[in-house]
Image (cartoon, rainbow, N blue to C red; front, top):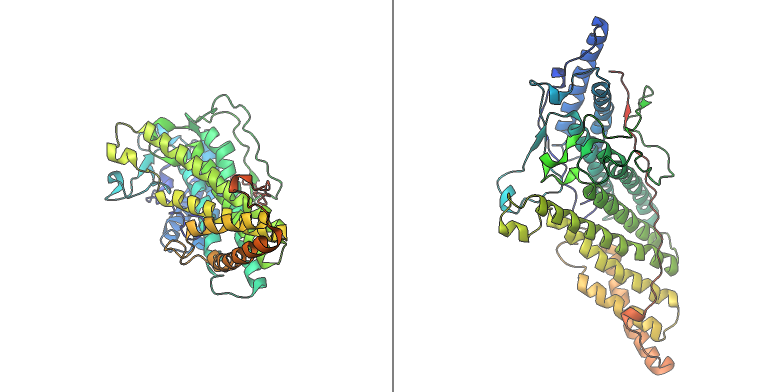
Length: 436
């Protein structure tokens, strides 16, 4: 998914000609300007599509950043009747997209990816913004892969910091979708109409604009349901139009950023107490992410009872790899938390033995040498922890038996800290570099 061992599958789309949108201006000069901008928008969209086949996430991110300001300008122009609304235009263009989360192992998707289509321009906007978030996460993964064979902690830490910035931006994108975008543009989402003021993201970082152009101007967020809203009921099988989808992706990006924080703390020699507090938040965040994905999957099945088979209803409609990764990271970082709590206790008594024994039980359950983790650079450090933890268990048990002679507490009796979450999303706002 976002970071090894499983990346996001970026949604696919088919080519369209945005020049088919019809200007509503009476001025010939305004019409010509509009047509030129639509031509440039079509060009930027074609570049984005080509970039999606090149397997370079940095190129995909760059192409989306160039296209989004034009697309936002088109949406703003249609909203203000400067362009004809696609859904009212019999000759309007269809925007077609696949999902980035649906699996392909069940019968519904056994032959090819399913395309969802709409004439409404906001469908295009929502899917492009999702692609931006997906691609930022994959770019973070791309950067982390560079650390696989590195041994210099300074170089590793620098790469981790770059990856964390990508995840902070992605978190801002998914926060926007969850708290503003989907509520403004998708009818049928929870609280869509009753929320006159979409809740503001809890963000303290500088604004992240999709383009670096100096001509940008902020587009006001629509506080009520837009007249360009997409009927969610028409896309019962598309997870991206559900608030739970944006929520799960936000939680996932937070989880992976927290993993980076743990390994940055290890690489920079932070104390065991600090590392344990960072690590405990990893397994709590992944647990929450997994629960949200389960809720989303159940909701998709409920909405598609008539179109999916009994066999499919027993399996996951969402790519099961995502939930598998959540489950494995949850187990792994619970073990790492217990390992560092044993070190932080700084004594070889019953308490330390309780932490270290349960740490090894978790790490053995994960099996850090399995197929899924083979190419995960984070596992280099995890394997060291696993080896060291087994040695410490032997030492701690022996000293407690000969010296302290204390009872060894069960896992449920061990004190686990609240944890520290470090990710601060970079705010995402729709902006336009052109006046359509």
